[in-house]
Amino acid sequence: MKGTLRHLNAAARRLARREDGTQLVELAIVLPVMLVMFGAVAEFGRFFYTYQTLAKATRAGARYLTTEPADGSSDAKAENLVVYGNTTGTGDPVVSGLSAGNVSVERSGGPSSMPERVTVKIVGYTYSPLFDLGKLVGVSGLSLNVDVSPATTMRTLGSTAS
Image (cartoon, rainbow, N blue to C red; front, side):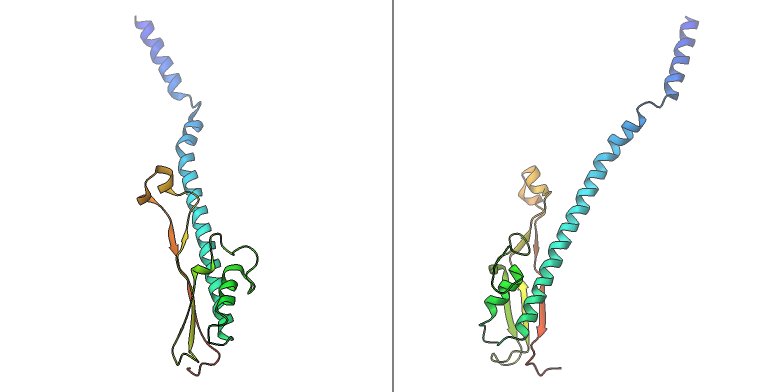
């Protein structure tokens, strides 16, 4: 009995000193956390890219309208410039899901024939992430969709305000 107990103690000590498989256990603990972090960084990068692209597009549209007549005849061309990157309205949108209906043009300050400022903004555009928690679990309240609405305001060339 005494020899068996001594033998079991020695076997337990040998087993406690072995490190076989510890790396696999550590990997199993860390890998899911790393994958979630990688997905979050990728989604933030996609959102930032989308926002910056839309902001640059509104800037181009506002810049175009500062040199055009204020009667609204160039608004459709400016909307095409924002959506497609050209005034003819051909090609693919600069951001998936963007349409001319998402572009708003407003003029303000001064008389209607010679406004001081023109504002181009994106309205009603929703960013949909690849990893949408609401879709994955089937609960719309957990959706990660975000409304993106950059706007750019510029003075018109005919403006006399300083």
